[in-house]
Image: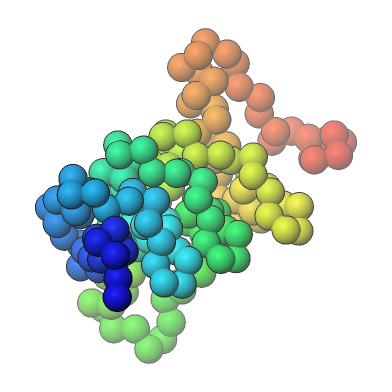
Length: 171
């Protein structure tokens, strides 16, 4: 038999999948844990971020959920958002292609929300790669752009790495 806390957390995860922000808020108010995990070990914040449920993600951020919580593979939500894992294939029709584009845009917003809230961009995975390394490998400049905006808002001139390689030699 489940405890009340387990039941609340289970319903919280269900509400995320159903994209029911009012229910998520009600469950959090009733005592569901903002750091609850699915039965497979995926944190609620992680799930809302990677599913592109940005309004729910904002709610978890405002409730103090751990921005750097990891799944069973040790990945943070931001790490999964930075890595590409979707593509438009020949089997997709126009509607599914549009849905995929909307989903990717929501994931981009989720990345920006996590970065703005202070998710750790310096965390390294088991192979020693940082999120910035992964972003560069996948051609994304999200983290670099965020750091530049942050530096500019603090009155610091950001470093630009487009004239030298990572070893410091001229390109």
